[in-house]
Every structure is written in structure tokens, then in C-alpha cells.
Image (cartoon, rainbow, N blue to C red; front, side, top):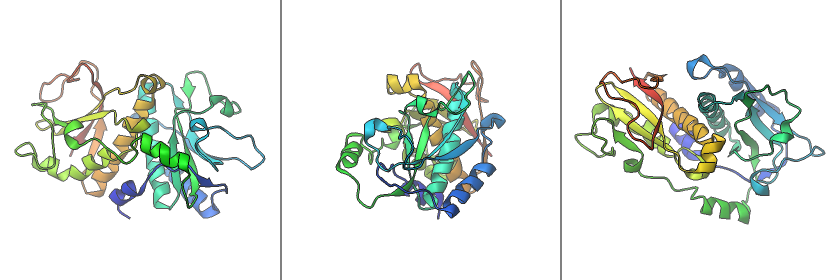
Length: 288
């Protein structure tokens, strides 16, 4: 299955059949985890699968809306923006692998951290978020349908609100010429898959600027919710967007690498980063 089809197929599931993962599904996920632990700047984050039995204490997620859950994917990372970015980037790749296997998932930002007190979490490290994973119940519940409606789960901002030309600061659209250079045409799938990426309450806190002379896509964070921002959830959102962009680009034969310009740095075109007061520069994709 093409990565674009997998991304379009993925949706947040909140009602599960309460049964463990099959041995084959669990092994496929564990194999994927063991082969994909390296993040940007060579940081390693070890994700793992946690299964709870029927008799175990239950964790309350999203105010009790999620039902039938007993299997989770989580990890421990440094408590800083760069590591949370990496965590979202790595976890979303695993989410899409689970989707390819026919499993259902749901990203969780709000959860009882005390539930994981038995884990050895050193000072300065956190569990940034977790993913519920399992087999979806055939029929969604009324609370789940209501939650998807209130969160605008099927709605996304259009291109002209998310993607821009770095020099002119004008919006990019799939049809915009002469702004649509050959590179933008080649990367149109990558940008569209970013547009479809999940985020906290579908806030889509990312803005991407294409720097033609430098041949780079600059990723910026646009804080949309103070609570989410304080919890570091917007960095997870940006990491998810990065995973969608990279996987789609590579599947289309578009090679590149992630680089991070330091504070006060300039791109090869001499433009300062960031480009606006309400945007926070995060990372860039340098096209090859």
C-alpha cells in the first residue's frame, strides 16, 4: 500500500475490542521499533508496547471517552522541544506502520502520568505522549462520533493557510504559478500529506515556507492553543507532520535530509530565521 493511501486511511479510533494484539501483529511492530529508533541529530528514543490484562488497573484517557483499550505504545524522551519533536516524528512512523497492518490507533496527550510510576524515568525525562493501539470495534459510539464532530476531525486548513513562499511570504497552492516551481510540483504530495496529518484538536500548528534559492522547506511552529503549547503537544504535532513529509517524499523518489539552522543563523539566501513574530522556527528539509 502506498504511503499516501496509508495516511488517508489512518484515523483516530476511540472504541476498541478489548483483546491483546495477535502474536504476528505484535512481532511486526516490535521489529519495526527495533529498526527505527534513530531520530533527527542521531537521538535515540526507545518506544515499547505495554499490554494490560483485564484484571489490571485501567488508565483513564481523554476523560473516559476512549473505550476497550488495554494496549499502548509509549517511550521516554528528554523534556525539551527537540526531543518532543523527535518523539512525534518517530511515533507517527510507527502509527502508520500499524495502520498498514490493519490496526487502529489514537494519539493521546492527556493521561495520568502517575499510572506509569513503575517505569524508571530519570529527572529531565518524560513520557511526552502515548498511542492507544488495537482492533477497532465495528460501530463507533455516540460520544466518539460527537468528539470527532466537535474536533472537526475530518476538516483541515487549505494550502493557502499552511504553505508559503519564503521570499515573497505569499501563499502556495497546487495551482499557483509562477510560484509553483518544479520543486513544489514534485513535493505537492508531501505537502498534502502534511495538511492531512493529525494534531492536537486538529489545530495544525505548522507553517511551511519553501525557500527556492536555498532549495529548502522551512518548518515553523505556530502556537494555536496555550495549554497544548505549555504541555509541549505542538512539538509532537510538528514531529508528526515531519514524518508525513519525509515518508511521502522518499516514496516519490525525492531525497533530502533534515537540518536545523541555529538561532540567528541565515539560510544560503541570506534570509534571517524566523520570518514572523508569531512563528517559531523548528527545522528544515534540504532537497537533494
